[in-house]
Amino acid sequence: MICLRCGFCCNHLDVMIINPRSIRPDGTIDPGDQNSMIGKPNGRKCPHLAYLGEVAVCTIHDLSCYRGTPCDRFDQFGPEDTVCVLGGYFKSSEPAKL
Image 1 (cartoon, rainbow, N blue to C red):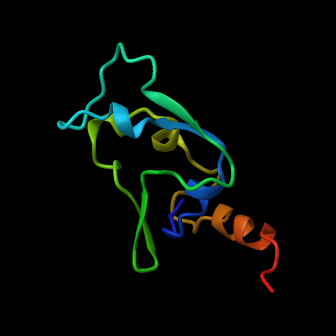
Image 2 (image 1 turned 90 degrees about the vertical axis):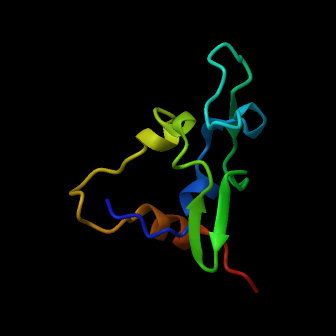
Image 3 (image 1 turned 120 degrees about the horizontal axis):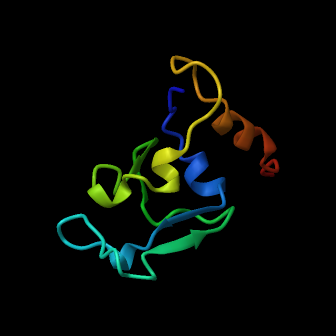
C-alpha cells in the first residue's frame, strides 16, 4: 500500500507503541525494560507523530527500536502499488465539524 502520509492511522489505531521514555540516545531500547511498550488508544495522537506542514511523519521510523513493532509490521490487504484506503475510511468516519 502507498501511505498518503495523512497521520490518520497514527491517531485512530489502538496499538502498542514504543514508550518515548524508553528510547536510548542511540535509538535502541533496553530489552529488559518491561515498560518499553505502552498502549496508544484509539483517538489519541501517537507521541511519535509529527507534521511537516500537511505531511505526517513518524519521528522514530528510522530508529532501530521501531523495527518489529506493531506499527512497523502494519500493512493492508491489496497490491503494494495501490493507494491506502484506511486513511480515507477514518476521514469519512469522523463526525462533521460545524
